[in-house]
Length: 106
Image (cartoon, rainbow, N blue to C red; front, side, top):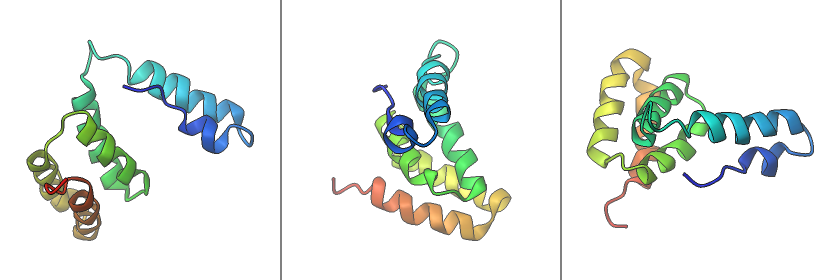
């Protein structure tokens, strides 16, 4: 996984400690533990969590999931499954994002 700099890029001057925790701990140390859990599996878990919360970070993590080898079919199944647990409107929103990101014409 590429070195994460979103924390420093977006919040580095305003909240340097939070930015460092985001980039160095969350994406540096936690996501780097691939022997314990693959990037692909971490992506599936993260997308599922963000979908249930209905937060805007879902879009970025759908893109990361695709980069980490999650397939369109897996994302469709994940969203369909979670629709019954997280709510239909959240699933609709997630499907709209996933359609853009996993568009097979790319």
